[in-house]
Image (tube, rainbow over all chains, first blue to last red; front, side, top):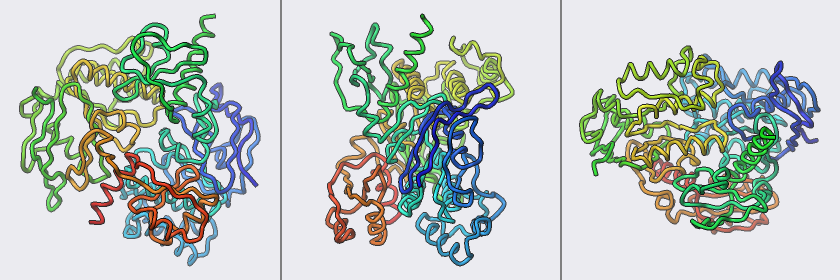
Length: 283
Length: 286
């Protein structure tokens, strides 16, 4: 049984949050949903977690007791201790106390939280609180684990622990879906869905998405002049230039062909969509 | 050339805690310097020392060649992580307030923000708020930009455009000090400074910091089994796609931990994030 959405559309009044989005979330795989603020990541994850009803489209998910959900901005009770948070979640999902304690002990000690059992969740650092949130969400071994921006603003050491928890859940067979605004992080997932303004911009393995870039991506020391300037963007101290199929490289300052990464590929897709819209407006 | 910001063996103690321990840091004109560190590494304290918000326990700090003061504050553009905008004020009012508070040159909002100049900031989408925060920080043409995770939560095209603004300011001679937890942002910088336990543990360009650090890559049809075996052997395996990357040990140890499991092992250069973990955790273990 695989989970996911097909032809999903969500509207809030006149505002379209998601339009015709399809995503498979199979067991044992980490699936990343990537996009900027307002792309529709949280809406998609809330539908998958059963927290929001779709306007149209099909949703496949297990029963609510088999879902673990870490929302974007909470996931723990600040006025409860770490131990109380875990006990509450265990009771809510009907996990026997001993089994819950054994599992929590293992997950907490592996992620540097073992010493924090009696601290209030609200007093933990951002990274510790996020780790606790993920441990709470996966405590009952859900079939579907939905994590909304588990690592945003979290330092790299805590992020490594969070990714260990994510890998652990997938290794146990959970279908894991997480959102992030960072492409290098999405690249760690086995499947990536890039959203832009509620619509699918690119989808596949990171390698698929990179291989599907139409045309070529080059590096340039300076922003190219003329028509090509529209196809250029900043990356570090240099520029990237997309040469769509059929666009010949210009004479003048050398463009160095490079193998695009996921960030380049998604930028090209966003640029292509933006240029297509601009072209449509002119007509 | 006088550095824009410079710390010389600066230290700051909070009771028994040495939060910043003899740190030398300089940001020159035209330079984008990234400051990396785990929570508690001392980044925020160092920034507060550099801005003159906190007096050092030892060592010294110079801004534009002088001691930090209200006058030097005017030459700095700051974008905090929470953007630091007043949500009940419009972008135009936020700008007027910043100018009234810090003096400095009268600036203007860029033309493309004109349409939202009179809408309360709290009602604007986050992406626009971020551009307003950048516009505010850049309006008085600061000589030094201090940016805290400036492009967190931004899609790649919008991110490239924000970095274009930072780079344009740098090409005009400004310096930028960027603190970040995200390696994608760190890769945008000319030079990186890595802190752990209050000290600078690595410094240089990205290739200099990564150096010849390597990881063992495990490719196997059943990554979950490999993950469990590596875990049982006490090795740190990170899942990337359907492969596992193991830090801090050689292929022989990884093979030993995997036993008879079918797997192809190879070595690959470490990423900046992996090198960062090695630097930080290596210190913690030592």
